[in-house]
Image 1 (cartoon, rainbow over the protein chains, first blue to last red):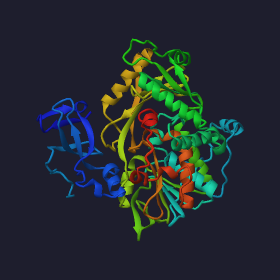
Image 2 (cartoon, one colour):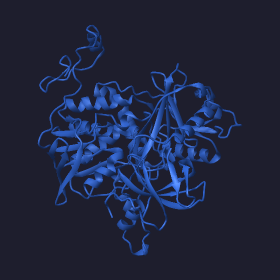
Image 3 (cartoon, one colour):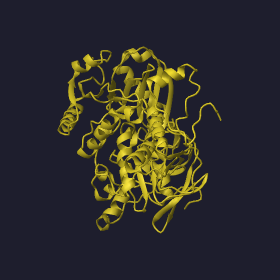
Image 4 (cartoon, rainbow over the protein chains, first blue to last red):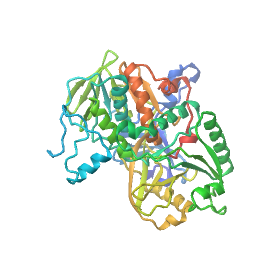
Length: 96
Length: 428
């Protein structure tokens, strides 16, 4: 059971209150019509799926119902930080 | 090293039989030949298979047996069959909805039927039937549709009503007053279970016998690509050259792909299972329920083998969250009230690589000589023989096997997905 800090409620809550929404910081293409099938498929389906640091979206479904981001280690399950939508992660493991 | 139990390369493999079992019992089973060698890696091979689980070993076996490729190696970072092969709930069935997938899984089921004889290794394949319960009208409509699709594809399938379910599994709770009453089920009589470890060991022994080098404790740290083609792999035992590298690494496929600079449409999640203390024979079939997230069978040892759902988040930790197990056990207790006092012995997690359409990827990549067999998600065990069989063909001929053709990576760009969430989503 993960304990997750909701940056909006400013409280540490149990995992069951949240729902997972996958990799974060994937911008929707501004002009989908101009993309090739390969580019569109890449946007919709392909993910980095790393073993280690992962920036991901969570939704506080049974709380404030807002989306936020988390930086979590997918190997140790340690959550390094949670931050509001629109903000950038501070823990990046040396990567931009 | 235990000298009483070895085999060198010039000593032929002895056949297992009832007679050999009797003979070895006379000296307390101390002189059995080793089932496979432990060779040092050569400098290069015709092909390298990364991942010594069931699918990887099956691939090696069929490459050697059917395509004459014996100068090949399987590299395993831990020990053979120590990943998901040893962590699943061993269910075998082929009642998938779409033509492409039902063909692939049914091909696998055909191979299961004679696998013990083919490998001279008892994989304990037991066709005890597999039941998928329906709990509401929409479940039943989906079951009718899937059963009809199965029958059109020549797969044995039937729709059961509540009473027929009760006749097959007398201990099931058929009350209509529970939260998720049983309205019926789909039933594949030819489905069942097999002994997971034996499948890995049988394929390993078979491949070794044909000359395949099985190299354990050998972790691939990089895939070396030059001018768009694979030239070998970097490992903790040094560089090993090969023009063909086939990755069969389940949950770690994304990590392997990143080494070669490509991305896959996969996410790795923990999937949990658990077994109870051994009890007397009480359930002689496999009962699964997608809706309440639970499935159960009983092993030959007597323990109840129970599968839970995946954790929602990406994880490589081979453990999951407790509430997932709790959820599954509450469903099991409602379906089988008499199990409420059975104690659970062990719980564990495996890392499953889930694909957006719940179907595998058996494919070439845009890197020449690099192949992937992954994305089996929560249900790869049942496909072990078929997966290895079609992937061996794909790697050996650098051309997808006709059955593997629909399962290329390209389908995520062309849009030709094979949506099996209904038949595969949870229950395996």
